[in-house]
Image (tube, rainbow over all chains, first blue to last red; front, side):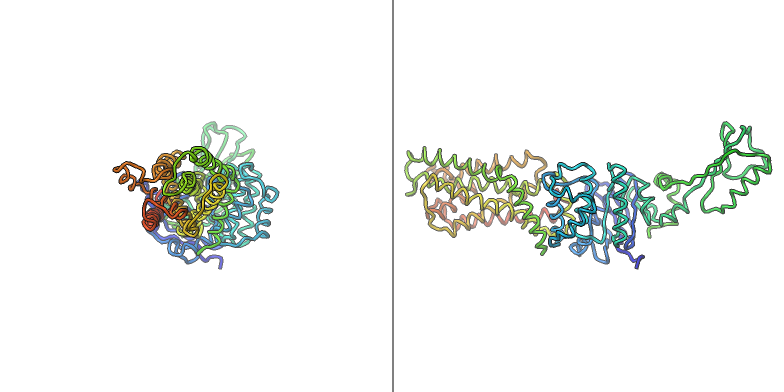
Length: 321
Length: 253
């Protein structure tokens, strides 16, 4: 049942004692087995939402369920299903890798399982470091330890709060591969990240949160299709003083130096549009020596959303399913 | 009950103690032994008996308690403060473990260390001072109850503290003076009239005298009253801890 909800958040709000409203009437559903990327600027409410679901922060009014169980009333059963990789590298520096991973497994009520933990540490390239004190590990290795701890009790849901922050490119790629592997094993993954490429590369669905409100939840591919913009850039052999009146097409702009024509169009529009534009240009004697096309990235979409340009439009379309 | 979690925290805390045994075990044993040598063997031999007990033997229960109280508080306070300080408290809060289980694990580990430390100091004292224990069961009961109670107090302190200075203030500037003034080195009957009454407001008087009664069968206050005072203090600490977890004070917002 791939569409079955594993997490459902209904009308959740959170106001901190300082009076800061971190979450404002959040409604969100996470599907079982998906990779869900939660994007948002600093202070948007990403970590608060994750912290409430994991039991680190007391929830405000609203309903939170994980696998049909209430996060507060059934906290034991809920927390057994969840693993958390926190944003900060919070580990006991004097402990060994093996001891700290065993501690976490025990905290979740699981009996020691050396075979599983060895497999886990090997998969994270930590096995040869198992007897090392955490203080001797590099930043990237410490982050791997956090992931090992989060997976030590074999959770069904894994929260990754900025998992690759400060991690080198190679390690980031390794982590992405590992996350995909977890998804293949049926683990639901909720990812917050500043690296839009991370979400773009891995997520099945994307949610955008801003100022404590869910601005958008959408299938990533659908989102790119709906909000992505394409650009066609034509380099002209000679500068054009102005576009002829007959070539005035919506979205077609001549650069200030007259050397480039840029045509911006929506990915939802008919691809035949480009042909029409090129034919029209030829018909009026405007030739080009080169052309380039590009598509807006998820980052462009994200920036556009949080800056409010498309937020209202999208909110009504995407909602928070 | 999440027994695995209790076991995991307990084992983790005990390992922390074993890893730092020089500081956690050897240091308090050596410093208390110095008291036995100086006040017991050297000066004590020139002091008169108190309530029929030699001065060197008289101070043994008080000196053991002096170490136990400070170490119990420090152990339990550091046990919960360090995860708060380093941020690793997140994994305790996110785990399927109740407040009750968290307290059992941390306080249980700290109290275990205190009791073991007390017994080591007791054995060490035998090397310097000749004494006997009239009520061994009650001696052990007082040792365990006092350790648990002050570990609970230390747990509260570890949650309350915002820095290492606060962790040290209470044991060094409150508990230690109260212990010195609580009859560890003298009987409160030796104090001038009004000061005997004032001394009864010092809770440590009841702990020291209850513990000393289990050794020699003599006490400035009734042993049952001593026991009641320990339970009262334990109840107060448990109530504060219950309130901490209910409100999330300094743990959860």
